[in-house]
Image (cartoon, rainbow, N blue to C red):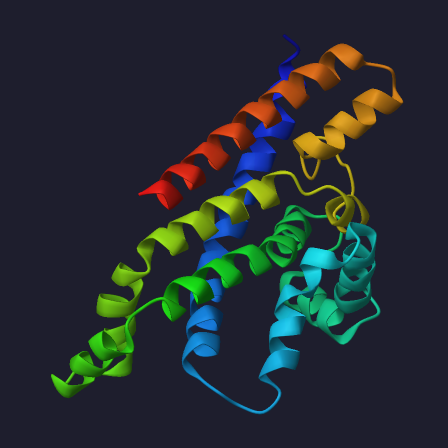
Length: 219
């Protein structure tokens, strides 16, 4: 098997892992806030959180280029801080994966927090638990199934990201070439054997992820 067969798979798993951990934190905080609070404009905020689910990946990639490109304030700040632009780097692939996978983690965490009996949390407050202690020691343990399911789905989504990654991070072998972009390039170049091998690996990993989610939901 060619040496470079493993590089896109390894990069995909590394990027998906980092992106999923970032999304886990962001999703828990956002899910908790949206489940516990009522405020004006809440529907608009939630729509923005879920928007990457319905936007075409090319639109997400375009927006990321606009937001983090070298001519944008954010892009210039990053380039000044790290002495290089973020676009077409490993971190660009992570950012793209975070954006497209966040809605899955957020929605799952929010659903889990909303399913908690308010009386349990109220009892914790009566016993003197602060909001952070309530969040970490009561709410998260009670919503753990939804949180784990959201994490797995986010990982699977980040693992398979293609369009936004290709536009924002590029397809640089050994740096930003994930399994999805490698499959695209292999098909374009007529290397169907490599394409099939990568496809088989991605299907296998995704199948295992979905089996785990279904197992959690059936408990």
